[in-house]
Amino acid sequence: MRGDAPMILAVENGRLERLFLELPYLLHRRDANWGAPLRHEERHRWDSARNPSLRTRWTQRFIAMAGSEPVGRIAAIDDAGFADRWEPDAGLFGFFDARDDPAVSSALVAAAADALRTRGRRRMIGPVNLTFHDETGVLVQGFESPPMLLSPYNPAHYARLLEAADCRPLREYHSYVWTPGRPRAPAVERLLAAARAGVGLARGVRIRPLDRRRWDSDVRAAWQLYSLTFADVWGNTAMSWSEFAERAARFRSFVVPDLVLFAERDGEPVGLALTLPDVNRALAAAQGRLLPLGWLRIARAMARVRTARFAILGVKRDSTGRGIAALLAHETGRALERLGYEQVELSLVLDDNARVQHVIQAFGGTPLKRYRLYEHAIRAAPTHALESVA
Image (tube, rainbow, N blue to C red; front, side, top):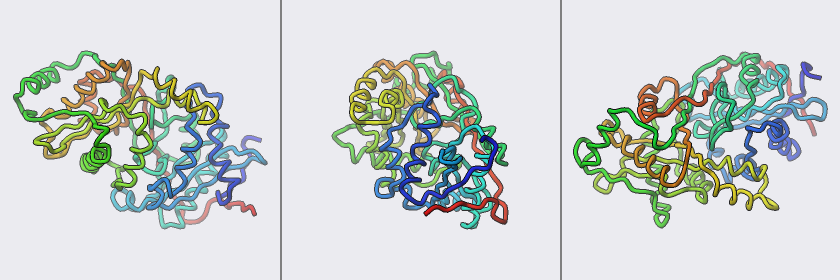
């Protein structure tokens, strides 16, 4: 019955692992806006041989059971890099899913908090699905449209469930929608006109697309630019080369070279703009499975995808303020128009990042969705007794 305390189990065997992975498909299968991720990709996220991000983080997963029915899940994550860089007393929680029942969410949050208490943490921040480079936050506004690639998605009641479990809002993120070809602010047009004429601060900058023949060197250049330009973004932890390379390999078959742009000065990469086709639209056709015909459905659906996510726009610190970001955004827009894309999401942008918000709005971007990150105070003594199974 709803409202009864569920049994909380630590995921310590294959049966509970399968339930943990399958739960979102059970909970959200009737939600038209939820895009089912590929099941084999979700399994790989918890395989340290395939996911380098697991190798430097401690995790413990839990599942909530109502009798024989799984009704919720959560993961406790201890990321020493995040704690050392940003929040010394904090751990993370992520992969939160639950039916609309405060008893379930409260028990799950308590279990994750107790696990992090044993690691010496005094606060818990989330949802963060392992790292801040992955899905971050709870969707709190913008439920009318499906999520784009790498964006979080959840039913509207998740925020209420977390707040009922003594989680308090900490930070918010925003996403914006941009229509290629939309009129831009006059200041942007003047800056671009000067750059195209070869004058002004962006003089000597060359914009080029990713070269598939130089995949390894271009991906390494992208990693170096990403590491340099996002180092001071709150929550960001240094991404190792193995982590970045694994992510790049995962999306290699979907990458459109003309949507991965490098800004170079004297042959040195100084800026990066990365836009990815909205693979979520194609994955929905496979319903989470590649076999027997999922791969064919994805291939056919990709040919019809007209939406994309503008995921990265970064310029090295010693080259900022020169109009390079505007050039990268402009050339990205031209490529999107040429390739027939109709709508682009720009995300995630922290609520206090006024500079980036101003640039997006100057290019004609408008608010689309809002996400919230929560924090939970960890009590000094355990709050929930775990059940054990043989």
